[in-house]
Amino acid sequence: MTFNGTVSRPTIIADWGDDVTIHVTNNMASNGTSIHWHVARLGAAPVMQNGLINGTNSYNCTGESDVRCYLFRLINVAVDGVFEFSIDGHGLQVVDHDLVPIVPYKTDSVQLTIGQRYDVISEANAEPGSYWLRSGWNTDSPPTESESTVTLSDSCLDEPPAKTVPHLSLDVTNMCGGVVYENMNSTLAIAFRLDSPGAWLVHCHIVWHASQALALEFVESQSRIPPDDRSTWMYRKTCDSWVAWTPIWDQEESGI
Image (cartoon, rainbow, N blue to C red):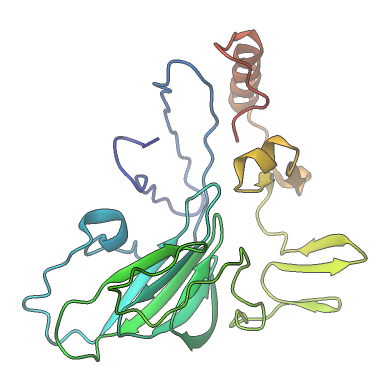
């Protein structure tokens, strides 16, 4: 599924306090869906010079001999697949994890689980030539003709938490970090700063996990949310339309 015929999706840029009106038309004939956004606080919008993995898989480097370092923004948009990113003959320096700047660390590859993002820097310090960028599924094996020295993992785990140390730690009682989570007697505790009043959706990126109730919505600082009669009316109208709609086949949930 694409938005405006593009993958990845169009970028929406807004300043703090802006009102954004988005019109979405569902052109799918036989099933409903829902749309939500992942918000990133940025300075100037990043301009992608090319799309190697999600584009042509080749890039003309003519005239860029003075460029020594490249920043790659990696996003795993899969619903059930973990991949391992690497560049033949080059190392990676990981500088950001899920939009949180971290203490940089060096590695030959980085593993992305479902819905995760990493920013990595690679230095063009090898002999001039053609080098493959690889994003192998975690169960794959490199082809026999591959020059890659990376052995793909067979796990579905993220990068070890000991590697992804936030640049700025926040004290939350006995826990530290930006968004902090900790297993306590089989209970997952999550801590984050209360600075964005609103209703927020938290869900697993594996869609059938969301269907099986691994999704929730919480309201943050409800008293600080300004009243908006039009939004209330629109929500009710959308819910009423959804209830009245008869799908062609049974759909278990709302389409997150």
